[in-house]
Amino acid sequence: MLALQGDVAEHLRALAAAGAAAVQVRRPEQLDEVDGLIIPGGESTTIWKLAVAFDLMEPVRKRIEAGLPAFGCCAGMIMLADRLVDGIDGQETFGGIDMVVRRNAFGRQVHSFESDIELQGMAGPPLRAVFIRAPWVEQTGPDVEVLGADASTSRIVAVRQGALLATAFHPELTPDLRLHKLFVDIVKEQA
Image 1 (cartoon, rainbow, N blue to C red):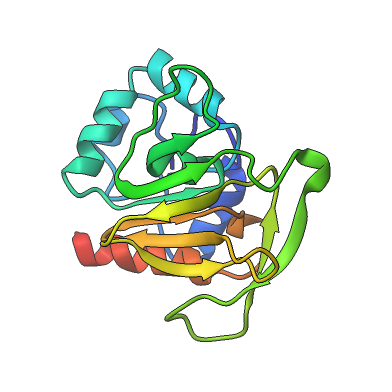
Image 2 (spheres, rainbow, N blue to C red):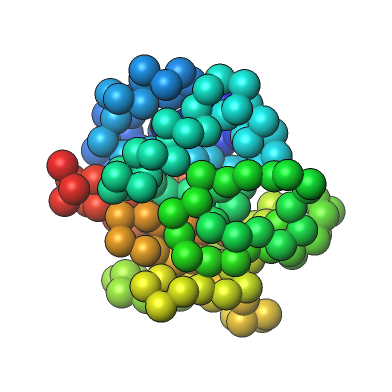
């Protein structure tokens, strides 16, 4: 769990409920102890600046390039994008998913909302998704699997590329553990 800023406690609870032992990562040496990494929702520019300040940008990039499973939610989706729209000057990401993501695409905090998302390849009812200053995916590369789109806008809000998973919404804020369980399974497959 990248524990620099954002919904860290909520993801830790969801991971425990999904059967995973979580470690909080704040320093490069802690990154060596993990088999997967969740990049939480929060504020993408703050996560980027803190990752630079804590000397984590390059180590996280290198681990992702080497195949470390990662799951980015909201700001974490932005951090896993190879390309951004509406980023601040010089904003960097960890990259890894061949996609273009637009920051704050659904609007400001006051425009936060909930929506039911059909998740491709996942059994069960639609997932109730919480969107808070959420991004969306504007474009994906050929190796990116679209897992879900917002019904009202048809915008892509959930993707997977290999061992990398990203959502524009906050699954950690609902009792539905399907995405956290999927990520735990991805980590186990890679281990």
